[in-house]
Length: 179
Image (cartoon, rainbow, N blue to C red):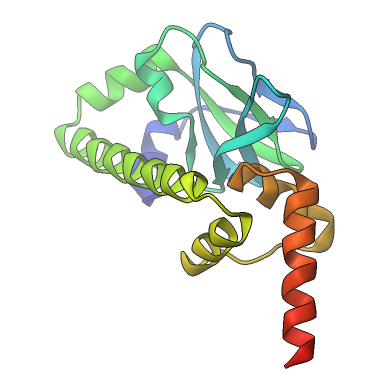
């Protein structure tokens, strides 16, 4: 995200969150906007089958759940992916500051357009029928596999089970070592 949104949050209070701590829950009233100052947070939904889907992974300098500025309630959970710090600003103040600065509002519109494009790409990847295809498409977008202890996050992002992802990674290691 562009540094251009940081001025909106310049006087916002900072709040620290521990790994796994909730920033907000689906159904909560939207009263605040969050700019990640350090660490990472994830927007998460759980399917009817209990599978975790990561809708957004926000890092330092990114606004979490951008579309919430125009919603009455959050539509998913936000969870700290590790220790993180967020600037927390009233939604009302956030919107007022955007309205008072046309250049900032234009930057915000461009940011939302990029977020829509990214969401469509994630949906396209998740629509692929095979785990192998999803993983290949995800990697082709410049993503890197995290440390082994975080592979379940990739599974959630691809909307596959951990076990299915682990089998695919094992298959790829086997194919790679046979070469």
